[in-house]
Structure formats: C-alpha cells, structure tokens
Length: 282
Image 1 (tube, rainbow, N blue to C red):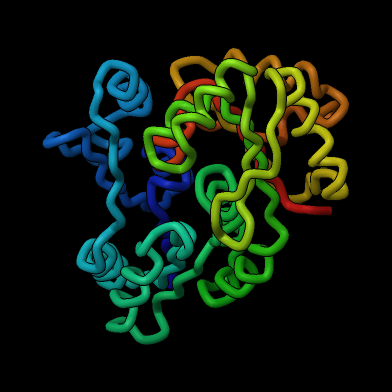
Image 2: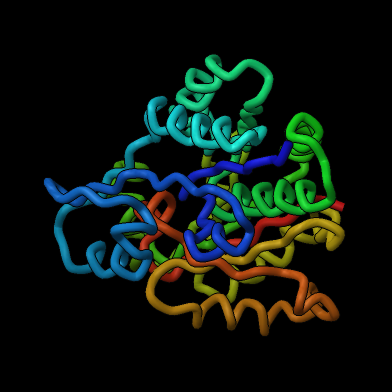
C-alpha cells in the first residue's frame, strides 16, 4: 500500500513542485470582490500580487471545505493508498477541522496532522513528509514523526510594509502611518500556531540582522532536515540580498535549502517585499 501526501496551497508548495514530489496540493479559494480563484491554479502568485497592487479590493482566502478533502481521500482509497494529510494551522483556519471531519469516514487509512504552521513552516513539514515517504515509512509512522517535529519548527519573517496589515485590520491606520514614516519593518513568527510580532526593525538592514540573531538564539539551523527561504511580491531581490548578507549561516549548505514564492495566504497581509525563513531546530 502506497502513501499519498495531501496538503494545501497555504504551504506555498507549487503545483509544479507537487507533481515533482508526487503529492496532492489542494488550492485555497482567493476572492477579490466578486472574482473567485483557486490559489496557484487559476491565479498564479505573480497574478495575485499584480491584483493586490492594482485593485482596491482587499483579498480574502477561504478554508478548504470537508467535501473537497473527502474527494481527495476517496481518490486515494480507490487507488489503494493510505493518506497523510497535513493541514494549515488550526489556530489560523478551519481547514484542519474540515480534514478531520472528512477523515472520519476512512477509519485508519487517513492520518491528519495539524502543522500549526503556514507558508514556509508548513512547507518544510510537507518536504519532510515526502522524505519519510521516500524512505518507505508508513502513513502512521510519517504522521507520528511529523507531530513530534511540529514543535521544533522555527519561522521568522520580515515584512517590507505595514500597509496590508492595516488593510486586513491587524494594526491601526495610525500605527501603519507612523511605521511607514519611520521605515519600520515588522518581524513576524508563528507562535503556538498563530502569527505573532516578535519585534520591529528600522529598515531592511536591521530586519536582516534580526533574522540572523533569531537563528542564533534558536541554536542554529539543523541541516539534517528541510530548510526553506521565501519571498513575496514580483521579485526576489530582497531575499537574495539577505542570503548574501547572511553568508555565514548558509556557507557550505547552498544546495540544501529551497526557495519558494509566498502565495495568497500570507501575501494578503505581507504584501510585496517580505522575506521568510523556516528551519528545524538543532
């Protein structure tokens, strides 16, 4: 019996990479006003950021409904596969609950894991699930290993602007205005499954310094596990600058980390110019 890995587009695993890894990525729904799209399927990441810039409509993403999980689980069952389903943090979305509801019909053949992550943190857990599957682990063994690894995931990001946090109601208009005037970059992490502000940096250079300091405080990067860097917007220039400025962290490991493009789930609040890093603690 083969193992089928199912996740969603909040992991920022592209449909192209999903084919390479032989996994299923269910797209979240993204709405701009009355227009509705499937994240990464009918709306590319570049297309999302173009709309974010061009339109006054603030985008909204919708969780995956139980019936869509059920469809994916049925397809796996018909193929004779067990399932490991990784879900977006239950503190941020109802997708995990939807997956659990759908899994009730499949007894012990579907194992649902609450990643307690989004974006790059979610990404590296999916990557680890793929690695364990390729090593011949069963669905139950993969799910158990992932649940033990969830608390060991570290995520840190620097947003380039406060504008979209303001539009999404996450901060006040006054705070966003002052922050923009002072070139304040919010430093973000995922704590207990939810988005948390770790601090505020004056300018991109200080933001990059905070990223490097966070890695050191966490005990460094465990290169025995997946590592991922990410950028938002239409260009990865800021991310490449961070990598160059942080060469001491990545020296000798240039071929061991992946770079992904932040999609709609986090891009809605980050806007363009954000960079992020996810790794497992040593």
